[in-house]
View 1 (cartoon, rainbow, N blue to C red):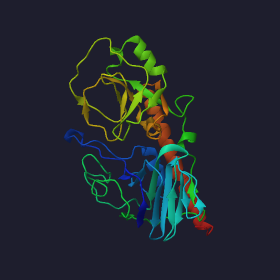
View 2: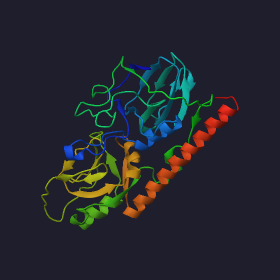
View 3: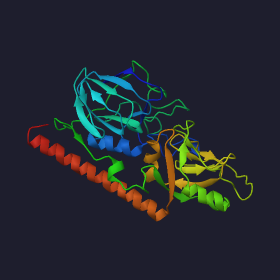
Length: 328
């Protein structure tokens, strides 16, 4: 059991989200950085989709009311378990009454806290994810508040006494360019409808993440993108990663809590394997788009899956060795 001692707004319970409900107008929701959540779960021997805490604003303090294995992934937040510092992308065991403090991030934006077996809340539409706009999932469809107590499903996995960690994906996975904020994008249906200068600017500009960014989408600031002629589109399906351009000419990247339909022109789609990079970008950070095709997107997906499979194998081997040597 975990008790929230102090928390900023918008800390929610998230898993990998809901699928199969778009036709009912229910968005995917789930973790913004799905890769960080999966890593945190694999470090603990969980299913990669088990529910954890998504923490987009810091600091935060919580207390463990019983012994519990947990992991921290995502942003590097100078975490402290009592007076012991914890590195990012690390799993360890907390003792009853231990206090975990997460401080302002040194890098990245969102921290993920996973626990043994995952967080134990009811499933709604096949997921434990919180959907704030629709007010369901998680705990009463809301963000966590001081005094909330959160139960873990639990598992029988034993960690080495010193804990176990992994190389962060920002190091392990190839970036799309010379910057960790470069993301790969496939040209979308209306890409050719933009004038030459706008298409060139889309691929060459540094796009600033604005403060009007949230789980529904990231609003960007940069050169104004202009169509060769005005277009009115009927509303059509939208998924996370779609880059739409409203009348003002400034792109919006649709993300986890985006509406399921929209009518703005689509200039590109960020590949799924790079959405975690956007989730870790903070207001004021710059993104750069790198043109990609479906074959490149498939290669990036395969690279991510290989990384996760290797992580699961390495962590499992470390746990077995620690048990065999009596240090677990």
